[in-house]
Picture 1 (cartoon, helix red, strand yellow):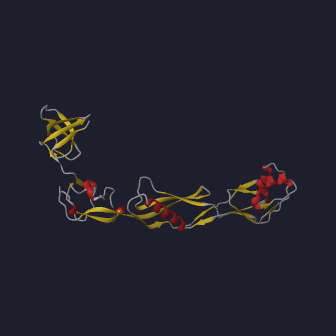
Picture 2 (cartoon, helix red, strand yellow):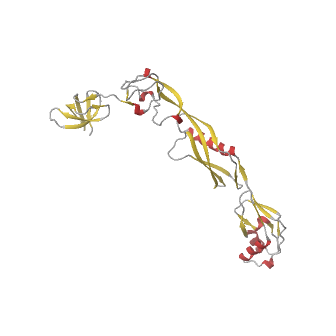
Picture 3 (cartoon, one colour):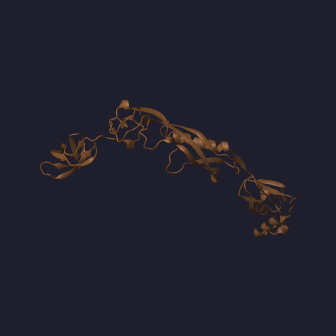
Amino acid sequence: MAVFRQAEVNAEEIRLDDVARVTGEDPRLVRKLQKMEIGRAPLPGKSRGIEEAHILVRLKHADIDPSRVAMKVPEGAEVVRGFVQVSQEEVKRAVRDFVRQAAALQQGKTRVKDIQFDRDIVVPKGGLTFRVEPPQNRGLCGRVPLAVSISVDGKVEKRVWAVADIEVLREVVVAGRPLGRHHRISEDDIQVREMDMAGLPASAVTEERDVVGKRTRKAININTVLRTDMVEFPPLVKRGDVVTVVAEGAGLRITALAVVKERRGRKGERILVENLDSSKGIYARVIDSKTVRVDF
């Protein structure tokens, strides 16, 4: 058996036939020697020495009589773990590809403005794959930390973090003029502009129909991005109004007159009304300024 002066391995364990040429007249012994593990491989890109004393110990552990093995180990013999270097750009490309695929599932124009990752990664040789995972309960918008898992032959070898600066442009509704408190909003009061969602709240209004016909809850300055909590339906009824109560079910329709007992009621809200005939209070949903409906 002749040990190589330098050998390269790509597995986690070193076998004798990785570092030596094993020959002999006994085929069974040769096969056993070839498959014999002599230690853990070094880390990718690193090396470790090969010593005759260590091989002799491994022979004894494998129940092989060392006297049956003629061994030649050159001075300075070593084994090197094979490796590949994953560049910064490969990691960034994996992040860009992930964001591009995710962007197809969300609204707006998405662009990666920058990726912060500034080192190369050393991993074992083999089939290289990347998996990018976003943080939970957070959208891909603004500065987003992304976990990048680098696998070789299906096994995760490295997990690193990259920070992507992601721009998502969407149309949002802004005030085209100053709007006073309780102003009923018309199409002339608003404009639609394309803006980066990173600097906007999640409640920013993106559709004109969501505000037209509603009223402001407070004064709003020009160019302010409208939020859902800034507008409301104007009240359709108020305390003391007389309305028609409608109850329907199983082909039957019943109507009665009632007086509103709440301070105000908007479309879709459930309010307390009092039947004028029975003086009984019931809750009904506002349909319009003259009608409320009892839910069955």
